Image 1 (cartoon, rainbow, N blue to C red):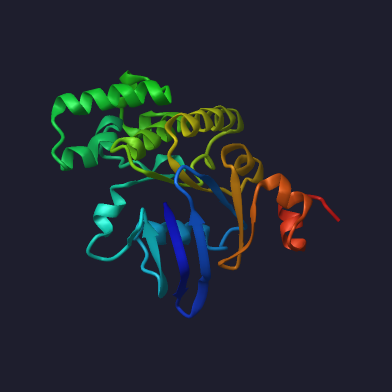
Image 2: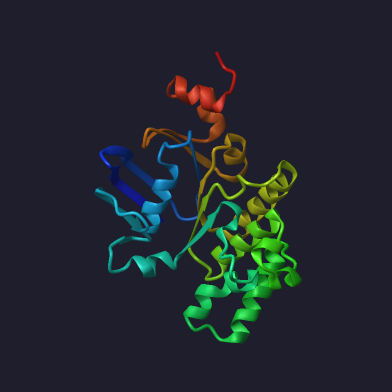
Length: 240
């Protein structure tokens, strides 16, 4: 579904990504883990076409990402960021339906999709009439997930989606997200600094350091046979 081929990115002479290659098969759930500044979020932005790589290419569903097709490809990808990333001047409902309205969906279709996604994410329909500032952190995150799913995309990208939540809300939403992923069968690429969250939500984890992939596989398998001391310390905190 997603192929990142020998991608590189440099900012102001500083190499922040690559050379990096990654294949995410259709229906796979993959988590990217690593320290701050290792290139995790930059990788997602390259896949979305928000950042142009200096070298290499991205292929989504067999279609190379180019300037002339990146908007069309982007509409096949749902994107969820920390705290929902909502527009503060729009109600929750308007945030969710923004792109669909721009594409000319008729009102009946919008209402049906809103009802379906509200039930799917456990979002109170009454809360959709509120402004983002009036919502709890968990509600804002649900709105962000609804917005990402609204066009029924093939791929879901999530950048630290639960990082701003309190531990209780975070655990509850982790369970809800895992259930959603399994029910929908979408291809999911998730960025998180939380190794336990990666193991819970994804089948495969990709460990990054310095803009490159150090090791990938199931978290338990990598913890048992880490590629180097960095992977050992990341996956097994307190290890000698």
